[in-house]
Each structure stands twice: as structure tokens, then as C-alpha cells.
Image (tube, rainbow, N blue to C red; front, top):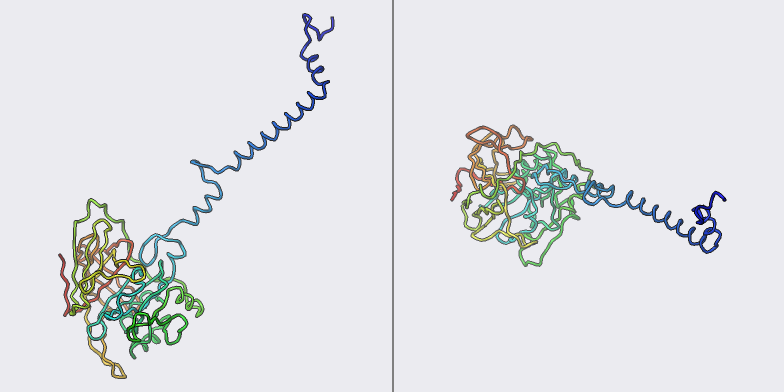
Length: 371
């Protein structure tokens, strides 16, 4: 009996030969094998190149994550893109005459200095870096103490002229100047509010940065950043605090009202909310510094009355942060160093909250009250 016949039945080998001899069976088998191969290859490629959901990130996701990595701003400590965090500071003189209100762009500033100019009218130096504004103003003229403050950062300085002493100081100190008189393309007048001409000059941070680039001004930052800390939990914050600053004129008096949920201070001026007209939001500060300075009257070489602020040395200050007041001392070693603030009781340098600073400079004839 043949080896491939067992118990009267065909063996597997005989069955396969019989099956394969049929052309239709061969065709079906070949097509099936090809299909299995294609399916196997497709499955392999899927598992090799599929997005890794819930596990390790894919290459594309890694690249996207790297783009979104945040860094602390040198100027105000807020977390932002690396480019914005390291952007060179830009200072703009913004006026505060009653006809200039509401101003544009102040809510985007990282640091704002407020000081009395002539006639009891306060004026601002608004500093930008991590954030910008497409309309800032009205822009007005410089004074020597604003030059001193921008010099601490070696920042770009935008203004519309200035008194004689300020313009001389800008040249002598090598300020990275963006005066409107020389750089008019970065400025424009907005006469829509029907006020006198001196209250109509505006600029934008993008135009000013472009001008600074064209002038080949440095982009390096050599100033020392303030120290920053983590904000306290909601439960440990006080319910309320208000700070009233008497600038000697009801139209310029300032009040800050602490907001527990935001852990920031909402700014009021002349008895009502101080609003940025560009976004219709109330201006607020994470950190308020009231700095007591001495000042002396002066007359420029062309008979302009003005003030000299004694900004080098040390003096008293009060820091308002987290709904609390810290009695402090300010210190500035020389003309180019940055003003720093120290806890009067412990002697340690103040750690601030990341976010906006408002630095209020008052002389001994002015006062503030805390409630």
C-alpha cells in the first residue's frame, strides 16, 4: 500500500496536491497570502509611527512642547517665551494730565514709575519687555529723573523732547534714545479725542523696537533682575487692604484696593477706576512700591523750572504685596546701578510677586495712608 494512503483515506500531502491542482484554489490562496502580507506590513508601520497617546510623546509633540517652554521675564518675573523673557527693556514717557485720560497701553507695562513733574501733575515712565502694546500714550517730554530710571536698565527711551537738563543728560549718559523729534516715523497724532495738540502724540512698542533695531542698539541685558517668589494660597491672604497716596491734588491722588482672589491691587485715580482705554480694563499691580525721596528745585540754562531727585544713596520705602505692608529701605549705589529694596526689620532683599510693578515716588511733603 502506498505510504500516503492510510486506512483508506488520503494523506495531508495528497489532499494538498489535489487542492493545488485546481487553478481556482491556487488563485484564492495566492491572493489571500498577499493580503496577509500587506495587512502585516501596515500593522507594523502603524505601531512604529503612530502618535504615542498617554505614553512617551512623539517627535512632533516633542517639538511643539519645546516651542511652548516658558521662562521667567528678567523685568517682571512672569513666565513667557524665551524671546519675550529676554527682550530689551523699553521705556516710554506717558503723561497724566486730566486731558490725557484715559491713557493707552499702561496695562501692558511691566513697571510704571509715577512722579510729580511741574505744577503738581504726575507723569509716568512705563517700562515694557515681555508684553507690548500697539498704542501707547499720550507720549510727553522727559525729565532728568526719568533718564536716571531708564539708565538703571540701559533701556531704550521714548519721549517727545524734554526740558533742557533732561536732553543734555540723555546725551551725556549715552541713553539709547528714541526721541520723537528724531524718530518721527515711530509716532503719530490721534486727534479724535478733541484735545489740545500736546495730548495727541502716540506710539507703539513694535514701532519703537523696530526703530531700535534699525539704529543697531544693543539687545544685551546686563541689569540685575529683582528676586521673585511664589504667591501665597488664597486661604492665607488677607480679606482687604487699601493704600491711598496723596499727591496734593484731588485730580492726581491715587488709591490701590487689594483684591484677594487676584492677589493684586486695583488702581484708582481721582476717585474712580484708572482704566486703559485700549482694552477697557482697570489697571492693576502685583507689587506697589512707595519710595520716599528728597527733591530740590532747579532752573535750567534756558530758565525752565524743574526738580532734581536725589536717587543715589538710600531712604525709606513701603512695599505692598499679598495684601500686606512691608516697611523697607531702598538703596542705589551709583548712577548706573539698579535701585533695590530691603526689609527694614530683617535686612533681607524683598522678594516680589511675578507681575506688574507700580513705583510711586513721593517727597517728604507728601503722604500715604493704609487701611
